[in-house]
Amino acid sequence: MFVCLCVCQSQAEAADRMLIMAAVSGGSGGGSRMSLYDSLRQTNGAASLIESLQSELKQREGEVMQLQVVEVSTISLFQTVQLVHFVLTNVRMMIIMIMM
Image (cartoon, rainbow, N blue to C red; front, side):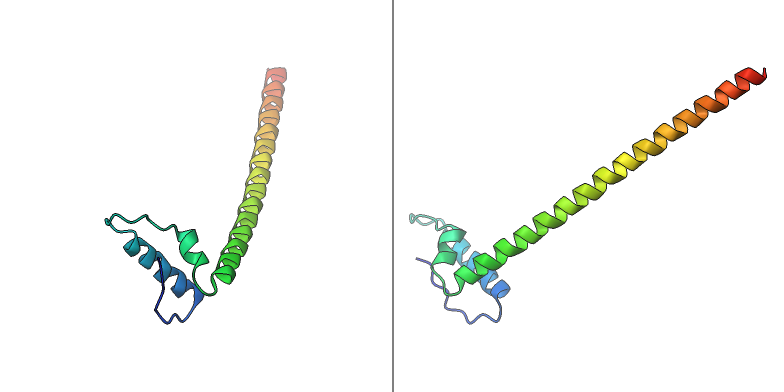
């Protein structure tokens, strides 16, 4: 069973310590390896830590979606510019052929 006896100054530090302790407690002995989720469930403040991590994950997913929208818009704009360039090149070629 995982028990954190450390005095932690922040949730991030607590999470780091839990990761280290979970890795150590799941060593090469015959016991079953405890998952990080199980370790977090058994510690004080784990619910708030999990909520905090879920909130951060949701925020990062939103940022990724915004970047994807910007990237799609940029690609669309680039394709439009290429199309305009192609049309102008064809118009120039037609003018040159007419002038000959």
